[in-house]
Length: 113
Length: 117
Image (cartoon, rainbow over the protein chains, first blue to last red):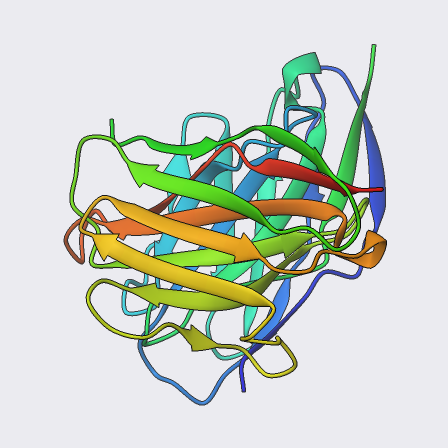
């Protein structure tokens, strides 16, 4: 079975600085999707970034980018120029072949003004 | 973009009663929807897969007789918590997948907070 591990329960970063959230996963599949979701206090899940495993290139979305290391099964999220609105819970997630999303335990990100 | 709605957003019920939560895909059809449960300060745990026109499939450890799922149309799935108890109090979230392999995404509803007294 697939597992997703986030080893940082909480992190803090100064506004305008850069922060990296870690995620590792375990799977026997060769093709899959990985995601980072943001859950603000409203609890609405928001997709931050998506990575297809067959793509070598790391995904980027504006200030958000990932470091995808397939062999190491590592999928970290880098947030550049952190903003107060980035404060939220961040979940790393894996999509299984039957479309199920398996979530990590999450990392709560605090932005310090 | 695609939107998934849930109703109600918050419900309080008495122990022993049943409560129904609706999940709707507003501008797309969803043959499959997923139901998650989230306890305070915890992650989302997949409860079941809702399949339009057929029985739902439940994750290990989820009581299918307690959490009844009905996917009666391509835009509506319902979760009924039967004989609710205080330990069923939680945040319930549904999701629906959409898109091509290039644009694949799961859209999440805003969630339903269930409080059982």
